Length: 309
Ligand code: KIV
Image 1 (cartoon, helix red, strand yellow):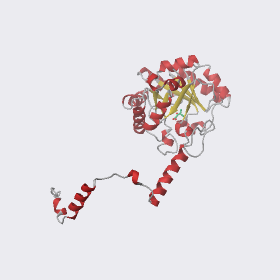
Image 2 (cartoon, rainbow, N blue to C red):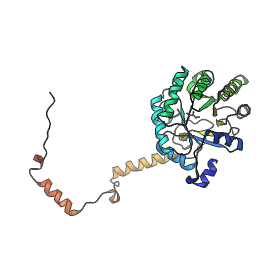
Image 3 (tube, rainbow, N blue to C red):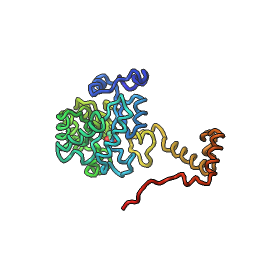
Image 4 (cartoon, protein in one colour):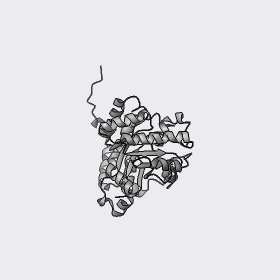
């Protein structure tokens, strides 16, 4: 069932999205809607609207942890965020992003990190970035029984080596490398592949060469699905946005307005109003007053402790 159909039919008709279902959606030409989430309330929202795949992306580094790139975020942080998202989700497939440094060094490390996101955090699958050694790591994780989503094109964890956060595959030499990575990840058994910041015409050639559903972000409308970062599309993030981001809401302005109104009302005394105050029986209040007026009130406290030696 597509996200649109699930939205129409209401929550009671939703069945969990599986990897098989994603492959069927590709075959049926039903676009896959994927989004990032990093906390419990966001997970509840994306559950309610019927998203197909949720990624606890390492973009959490910038979006919620305040790092200036995705490089510093670690497994402990990704695990905590993934657990929070898991608690808010029932239906979408939950993918945990393997952060930089958690899989590159060896297959053993990659399997252990992937197992942690599945076992401890409750993710259904993991995502890793790039080709090269990542293909071997993907293969090892899949052999260990954990589904893997690949990610080619602009791979933010290694953006420095790619010349910065910029579109990839605008020359045939770079495009062939992106295509080779995607084909190798597909052959390694990845259940889906993210294609990031690649010209649409190049993405189309890659899409036609791989079996797995492709999920585009800045790759045009030729992929089997789309992914955007929640904080970009909802307008929670500030500052420069990549060309491929479309803003669907302005949550940050609304949040700023609410917080500013609160501060102004605290300062003016308008908050809290009578409707935010608890009442008490006047007789109880009178009894309290009498007890507070008693001279021996302090002697009712006894401190039963010995000073430490
Ligand atoms: O970390 C992330 O948010 C991602 C998506 C942009 C695909 O990798």
